[in-house]
Length: 171
Image (cartoon, rainbow, N blue to C red; front, side, top):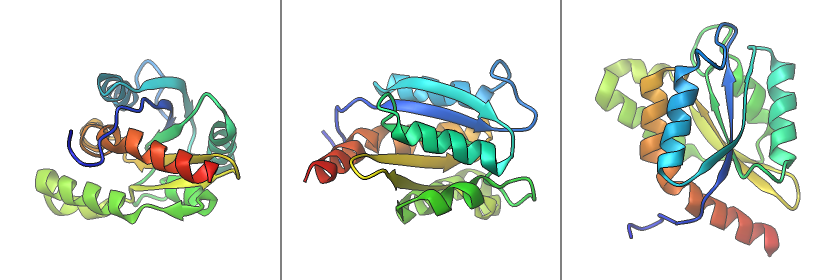
């Protein structure tokens, strides 16, 4: 088994941030679910919220405390447009950031789309609720970006990350 890959299955909450999409039209969210399930994880919660900081923060905070949620994946709102407020809303909630996630995501994106990759504010980290640490990943809303991030970075390492977070919470 490659280093860092685990068979731990995660219960994932999937949040799409969009003023225009519905669940039926959320192609990126459906792709994320497919990639996560293919890797042996399950999606236990799914929602769409508008690009409104209070709506995003309230749902992320609720899910990070929910025992049915091991990790959170958020799609949308990570670009440079004025309405792209996902990182501005969630990063202050993080106990710590995993800088390697954003760096690797932008590197892989650069290989696919070129210099436009630098416009992404994809980030990962975790929310610490004392006895529970919940990893969270903020992704662009494009289907290609979501597929890349989930299939190449999140799905293969999520179980290992959860094992580390769980061990540290118990110690």
